[in-house]
Amino acid sequence: MQPPLVTCKGVGKTWQTDGAPFVALRDIDLNIARREFVVFLGPSGCGKSTLLYLISGLEQVSSGRIVCGGAEVREPGTDRGLVFQDASLFPWLSVGENITFGLKMQHMPKENRRRVAEEILERVGLSEAIDKRPDQLSGGMRQRVAVGRALALKPEILLLDEPFAALDVQTRAKMQDFLTQVWQQSNVSMVFVTHHIDEAIALADRIVVFTARPGRIKTIIPVDLPRPRDTRSRAFHDLSVHLTDLMRDEVDRAFAEQERVR
Ligand SMILES: Nc1ncnc2c1ncn2[C@@H]1O[C@H](COP(=O)(O)OP(=O)(O)O)[C@@H](O)[C@H]1O
Ligand SMILES: [Mg+2]
Image (cartoon, rainbow, N blue to C red; front, top):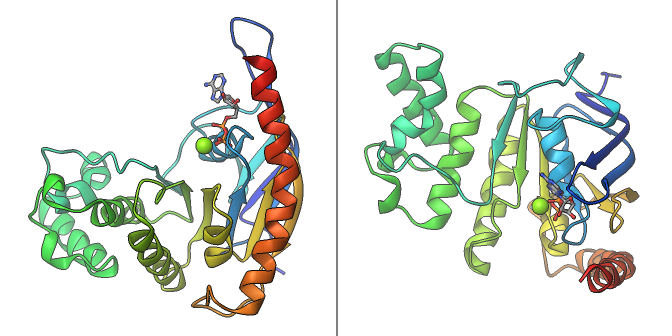
């Protein structure tokens, strides 16, 4: 069996705030296989983004270690692509230039960059948009460009932090299909953060359910449903009910915590 792409061993994160130290994550043990689609699910504030940033190398672990592709994670790297809720494209650059911005930083010649942009935009279904500006695109299209920009650097894993949260329900469903296709046609692993139960079931090979703060892994649920996932199937519904029950306790705890802090 292949070794996992990412290993988190005993990972903890304590934020140093002006008051008491703030424990955001504790004792996280998690392996992510190559080509696996993992979803982090949990109530707001449970540390999902924090764990994503630790894997990305944007933030440092307070305890434990994270290994990606055999090397300990200490800083961001092109092997780990990032996509955020807000596409944060460069508004003054064309879509094509946005896609290949990282490659320009790596001094790839202009003609080659154009070719990469064409190839990537075909993969994300936006070939027509290559010379458009970001503000000419819809929210869903901008997120497809953000996924394309992350893919352009040939990452081994994409780390996506609630990338569809700002989209309307219909667009969101389309984007889930889109992301599933991109994933199936590539060799990348995915880590996708959401607090939406149905989104987690639509996407994941495995759903990592977090506890309320301090975030720990409550349980990991494998999703063995065929793709594309039928949101109206009995099995989908049953899993949704099960996850709702699992999450309810944690949401209650998170809520009680917020009331206490206030
Ligand atoms: N840079 C930071 N400094 C201090 N506290 C932070 C920082 N980032 C996040 N937190 C806190 O850590 C907890 C977990 O945050 P986060 O990972 O963003 O949760 P989630 O993504 O699950 O909503 C929250 O209580 C949040 O306020
Ligand atoms: Mg978050």
